[in-house]
Amino acid sequence: RLIGSEGTGFGTGFTCPFHGWSWHCDGTLEQMALAPTGLTILVAAKVVAHWLLSGLPLVVLAPVLGMQFNLPADALWILTLSLLIGTPVLSLIGAIGAALTLGVRGGDVLIALLVLPLYVPTLIFGAGAVQAEISGLGASAHLSILMAMALIAAVLSPWASAAALRLALES
Image (cartoon, rainbow, N blue to C red; front, side):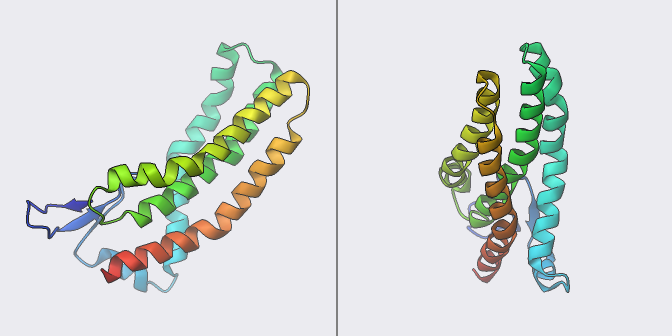
């Protein structure tokens, strides 16, 4: 979303509606793109910072919330493990959506249309792992698929986000 456009169509910066990241048109984003570390590494660092501030507290609070719902001890461990694997996937997918909608008019709605369908498999397999453990079926299959999603997202998301940011810089 453009910052400070005042109806002119020209803004003084971009802000990501998902993560709240903001870059002003003072050359900060360009300097990040030209940094010797590379934009992919910087995007990965921002995603890790986002996960540490939003995903990790959820993982830490999950056992307490699970005890309130009277989950068995085994299910609490699976809940914590599935959140530990699944929440980084959500942050990585969100980074792609945020980078794709950076500077796009109506990006708030567009990010929901892009990202929410990609969140569904992660949420299904995360919740399915806990349900399978409660049912006595074992959660290893669900956790294996979640781990595969996490590995694929960890490899592809920073690259895709950096490519989308480069596209936003060109326009």
